[in-house]
Length: 222
Image (cartoon, rainbow, N blue to C red; front, side, top):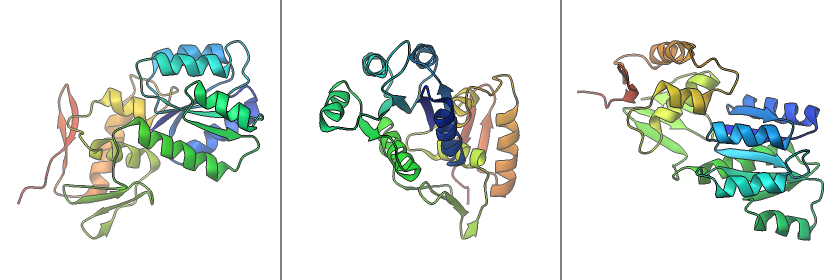
């Protein structure tokens, strides 16, 4: 999933981003609302983690913009004001969830994951295709009875290919959903990751390349 963190306390913003990346998420960071507004116009995020009290463009205004926009981005609002009236106001603006500071990072991760599930068509916690079983909660992959150890990016690519309704998945979508803004769009990182993923999954190869279109998982042939 791709997450936007908008927080003007730089140390906190960077800590949140680092922790979410360690959980396998692609994370972009903004330190003010104006930069976040531009980022939201450029990318389709699954979840936005917004500090309500932001300089330039406030969290309330950003929430209104996201709600009125074309994407199904879910909003987790962060604030030191965690009273009932504040929560009600934040939710009434269109925020999907509300978390007061200070917070436990494990709770933040759980809330972000829950919101991401709502941003996309509901998917079962275990995805199975072509003899591959991918556990999105335990973050484990098996091919048949064999455990397949994957890196975070390899896991993210495979999860995107196996998501419900996925047909051909382009390199551009993989870059957007698995990597973050710092990746060079001209890089060959998707191709290299796909090579190592195929090698780890073993034979017969189930991830097919469609030149000019992207990648697709084909069912194993007898």
